[in-house]
Structure formats: C-alpha cells, structure tokens
Image (cartoon, rainbow, N blue to C red; front, side, top):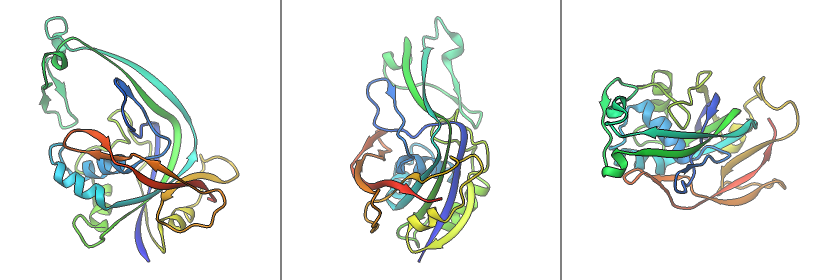
Length: 241
C-alpha cells in the first residue's frame, strides 16, 4: 500500500505548461510533474534559484490525474512595453511577497516590446493523486499535507493569474497504486454528468483497461535553465469516477 495526497484543481483559468515554442506558452491537457513541482515547491517556500531542491522533489513525484470537466482552451495575446524611457512604470515588477523585482538579461530582454501568446484552460476541473518515492526522504507526504493547508506563499495552478476557486487539498488515502486511489474519489458536482472520464497515470503501473495506451510526455523541468526536458511514459485512458 502507498500513501496518497488527493488534490482538486478548480479555477476559472489554469495552465499546465508544456514545451514552449518561441513566444508560444502552450498548455497540455493534464498537469505534469513540473506543474506539480512548482505548486508544491511554492507551498514549501522554495525559491526559483533553489534548483537542487526543486529537481530532487520533481524526481520523487508520482501522480495520476483525472479530468472531471474538460473546459475549453483559450489564448491570451500579451504585449508589454519594457522600455523604462517610454513606460516608466515598467522599471520594477512586484512579486506576491511585495518585494521589487528587476528584470535581468541582455538589452533585448530588459527593453523593447515583449509579445507572447499564452494558452489557458478555462472552466476546467481536475482531480489529482500524488505520492512520493522514496517516501521517507524529506519533504515527506506529511510535510506536503501540512504546507498545502498552510502554504508559505499564495498558491496558483500553473501561472500567477490562475488562482484556485476552492482549497487544493482534498485529503489523503491509501491504495495499492495511484490509479485506484484516483478512481475512488467521487465525481464532484461540476464534473461532466455521465460516462467515463479521461485520465493519466504512471506508465509502469500495470493495467488491463482496453481504453489505455502508453504515450510519451515531456513534463519535467530543468529548473536551472527554466526549460522542459526529458521524456517519460504515461498511460492515457478513461476511468470511472
């Protein structure tokens, strides 16, 4: 048996970052390990520059995710004038901690007009089961349970504008694997009314479901260089809920 944390992702907007292409900030259909690492690392109070802590947490994370409500994908066209001579209010940005944050990099990164397209999922709803391997290392699942109830900083689902509409933590469970733990969570009121629900679960979990297929995903993040890396296998299929 394994210990499992159960999470509910419910927000007007959420974003599950995938491999970025130029100025296109895409979102995948399901949350990945990088999304969960960022969320849990934020709750723990980790900083972006603490790449070693984030990498260690990411390697230990195992998850299964169920799409309870599909929602729809929208694209936000964003432009920002970063030149302090034409836009003096852009000299400083503000973090959620209220601390001024300057913009680094070369001249092109610090000045001029920055244009990008960011993809979001609107009105979607997900249930996620998370565990850690090995379970005895720090942080433990007990630590994650505690900080999700009282996080070090405000939490968001993918990007800072994606604020949860309800508490993220549903509770805890024990199960043989992640899939039955996920399937045992009742369908929430806003979920799709009937029929099986789409899901992802670890590729090394045995399954005899006719709907399941193995798919390659790139859902890890190089936290030093801030890019998506690697390739893993996950099951994609439908489950009851």
